[in-house]
Structure formats: structure tokens, C-alpha cells
Image 1: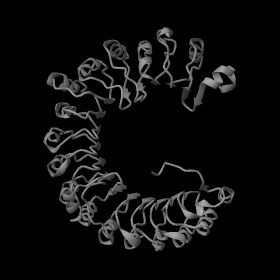
Image 2: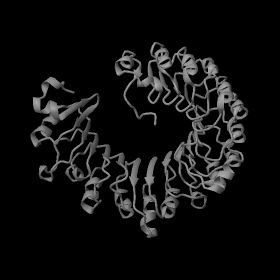
Image 3: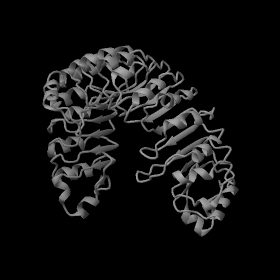
Image 4: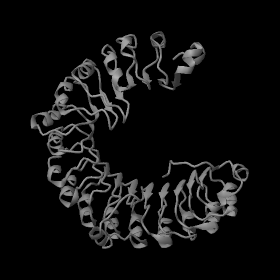
Length: 449
């Protein structure tokens, strides 16, 4: 790709050159777009602004293989014959809808392998599934679709028989669509998160090639887990907030290839951890309880029976020698639980935020590979800060931990590369006193929230 100094001053302000492509932050002129055809190595292009329809077909960008555009720009790309990846960027306020013209334009992209429509808008009505099936090379599809009471329209998603990756969002009448998804036998990846799926319609998902499955925020329950247990090639499984209990975990023990498991926001306790400990290939495990989950009175009673996780449950995980990432956030494991986590020698990333831990966290120093620690919302104070300052961490998040300025200084002078210490008493000092510590992020950061 040509260097920035070969572009005009106007192009330099419009184009953002990335390692493998160009991003246009402003609306370019026709001449500026045509200038891009001289960049023979250019394969990826992002248009953050709508192009006026008066520009006509942007046929001169025929070498582009990956394109990200706003919705209305789609009609300008029918002659981009080498395009393999098309992504329509998210615009929540956009009212545009798919039409025969827009879908017809996409159908002309015969080499298209990946088609992504960022949620939540625009939605792709089920009647267009069959039309898009002419894209015989399409293997990845990410869409948000309308509900449909028409069975013929809904089942037309089965025409994408060559798909290997599907990410679908449909909040109503998913039953018809999910039944048809069950016929896509080549799928290796399926994301149907928050689609109102129940165990009744899950029985149609006999997709035995699946290696990655995300069914989070659906009412799966025990019967649904029996279906999932048959998908023995799974390596990644997300069942967060799926109304599953310790007994349901029994069905997961057949999934011996699992390396990533998320069962957070469910009714999982020590018994569940014992069953999970048989999955010896796990590298990621989350049993967190999120701050947004709400239980009614009856659910709270259920939650208090078997949801408790303490040091006895954590002790079962010592058999998981490949475990790298562990998330217990929101679970009151207390200091005794931290003590047993220190015995998990393979842990690299640990989240124990809001776990009722005090400053007695010395055992964390015994984790030789720990480089990323989230201990937000635990009253560890300066005692805990002194222990943390002796650790060699890439990143520490210790917001709202009752750390005074003395504790802040200890962390600021430590070998910790990046520390987030917002909402601690010690951070209220003069900003100049804080900024002298180069490893402490002084401004509010939301990346951990």
C-alpha cells in the first residue's frame, strides 16, 4: 500500500490508514474514492459515513475484498466482484429497511463468503433468506431478523446449507426459525443468544459438527442440557443465565473437548464445581453472578439452596491444570476461597470482584502465572494494597477497595504495569500527586465495568 505522504492533504484528513486497509471517517468525494484504486494492495475499506446515491456504482474499487459500510451505501457496490466480506455497520437510529433492490445488489456479490449486519438495525425479514441463498460461497452469516408467523418464510433459512457460522437474533417466534437452523448440518459456530429459546424447541438442534455454541440468556433448563450433551465436539459453550442448576451440570460431563465454559448467573454451587472439575481441558471458566440479575422471592429461596460457592467447591478445581481464566465475580467466596485459588497454579486471568474478600490475600502471590487481576469492590484496604504491590501484574483493577493514599503509593511504585484505582480514598489527592505514578490510570475508565 502506498504511504501517507503520497496522498493529498485532504486525503490525509479523510483517510485513516490501518495496517491492512483504509478507514474513511469523512464523506469522501468521488475523485478521492477513485484515487484509492491506485493503491493496488488495498483490500480492506471502512466507510463510516453514508455515500450519496448520486455517486453511482463504486465499480472502480474492484480490488476490495473486505468492506464495512452504512446501510444505504449497499446499493452502490454491485460490481465489486472480489468482495468476500461485507459488514453493514450498526446504526440504532436508522429506520431503513431491506428492500428488493438492496437484497438484489447483495445477491450479485457471487464471491461473498461473510455477510454481517450489526445489531440491532436493520433487520433482515425471513422472506429474503431464500433469495440470498444464491450466494453459494457464503459460509458466515450474522443477522437480526424479524419474527414471522409464516412457516414457509421462516424455514427458508435452511437454504443456507453451506453455512459454517451463524449469529442470529430474533426475539419473537424464534421456534420456527430455530427448527430450521437445526438442518444446517455444516454449522461449526452458532450464536442464538437472547432469542427466547426453550428446551422444547432446542431438541431440533442436532448439529454434531458444532465446536462453538452461545445460548446465553435463554430458558434452557435440564431438558435442554440433555440435547447439548449430544454435541460432543463442542469446545466453546456459553450458557450464562440459562436457568440451569447443579443437577444440569451432570449432562456437561460428556463434553470432554470443552476448553471454554460460561455458566454464570445460574444456580451453580459447590456440587456444580465438582462436576465441572471432570472437564480437564478447560482453560476458561466463569461462574460469576452479575450485578444485573434479578431474582424474585421464590428464585432467591432456590438460589440459597445449592448456589453457595466456598473454599470446598474451589478445591475441586485444583484438578484443572490447564485453567487460565477464572471468574468468580459476585460470589461471596471470602478470604478462605482466595486461599484455595492461590493453589491453582495455572491461572493467568482472575476476576474476584465483589467476593467479600478482606486484606488477607497473600495466597494470590502463590499463583506464578497470574498477570491480570480484578478485585473490584472488596475492602482490602492498605493491607491488601501492600500485598498487591509485591506482585508482578500486567493489569490490576482495584477500584472501590478502600485504599488510602499510602496504598496508592505502594502500587504506584510497584512493578504492576497498569492499575485502575478509581473510587478509592487515596485517589482524591491532588491530581499531580497521582499522575506522577505512570502505571496508575487517573481518569475514569469503563473497560472493567
